[in-house]
Structures are given as structure tokens and as C-alpha cells.
Length: 277
View 1 (cartoon, rainbow, N blue to C red):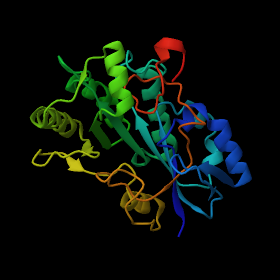
View 2 (view 1 turned 135 degrees about the horizontal axis):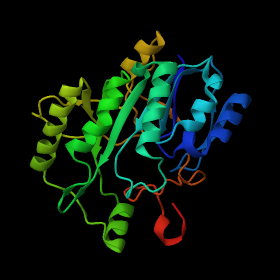
View 3 (view 1 turned 120 degrees about the vertical axis):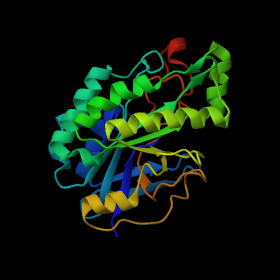
């Protein structure tokens, strides 16, 4: 059975390492180092081995310029689109990203796009992105035919806590009732826009209009590709993750992400301090 290949949870390959990915396609494989064990494995990338490429990015401009390279593959695009430029200093403007959605939808079909409204960051005075932000992004996406939106709340990993304390970001982890109230507001907005609201790794039982889901959904990808994918749960993710098993070809260490997002757990230091992300 062909494999789902994730490009990539660990870094933004379409935005910053596209040349490397295209070289791997020419070679027909990628060599990937496990971030925990250090073991290097080979991931076959020829069309006969790949069920679906799942691309994760905040900027698909480069991939759109090289769209012909995917003509032999089934792609799926997880497009993270937020509206908080102060927190994502290296991300293109919202208008540019919305233009990219329109191009992706026109070329590949809107059913192959999942909008990630992620992460939802709370400060002491409330959420950085409100339902108004959600509507501002969601309306043009819905007009492009996109129907799937996935959200999750920021997890305060160790590096995020250190950064939060060091420069006074004011990030807080709100109580469950606040998260449920916020999710309920998103659900109303999503319903009005004709969007299907899904949650990633969140316990939001009882919130009407929110469906627990998986970013990499093997059932969905099987339907889009017209052939079954692997069905097992990805054991390499945290226990609350529902994602279908895939092979990720990115690297935290060898492919640092220059977006410089202040909330990102993968960033080893602050872009404001010395241009490092």
C-alpha cells in the first residue's frame, strides 16, 4: 500500500526548503533523520510509492510556481492562515495568502485544502484572534469553495514558556470553560459561512458544531485519491492526536523555520534577539 508523506509538521518546507524537496523528487527519495533517535531512514518519493503528499505551510507561493512537478501525485494542502502579524513576523500578508488559496483551489480543487486556524493564542486580556478575525479569513475562503477548517489552542511547551517569561508575551492557558465558549463562537461563525469546524487534539465535549478530527485524515485522503490509504493511528504523535500514520520528511534541526512565530515550540531562540528562529 502506498504511503502518505507529510511535508512537513516539523518545518515549512514549501516556503523555505522547496528546492531541497524538488531535488528529492528528482532522486526519487528523501533521507530523513529521526529527531529523537537520530536514525536515518529512506523515504521513497516516486509516484508508485506515494499515496498523497500532505503539505503544511504558511506560504505556498513557491509551490504554485512549480505546480507541474506534482502532476503525477495526489496533493493535499494544510494551509495555516492566521491574522496576527505581530506574532508571525516572517509570514506574507493576509491578502497574499488569500490569493494563494484562490490559486490552489482553482488548480487542485478546494476539497484538497484544509484551513488551519492555528494556534489560538490567549493573553491575559483575551484571545489574540477573535471571531471577527475568523470571519475575515473564512469569508474569502468559503467563496473559494474551501469547507474544512481545523483549529487548536496553543500548547505551552517548555520553549514557549521560557520565551513567554523572557520577553513578557503575556500568554496564558485559559480554563476549559473559556476555551469551550470561544469554540462555540467559532462554531456559529463557521456555520454561517458554510464551513465545517474541526478541532485538533482538544477536549471540547459538548460544544455544538465542533467535530474532533485529524489534520491528516486517511478517510478523506482515500476518498480524494480514489484508493485506500493506511488506516492506523500515527503512533509518533501525542496520544490525543487522531492523525493517520504518515512519513514526515522534515527536520527541526537541519531545516530551521525562518517565519519567526513567537508562539512556535520549534523555534530555539527569538527572531527579535538575533535573527534566529
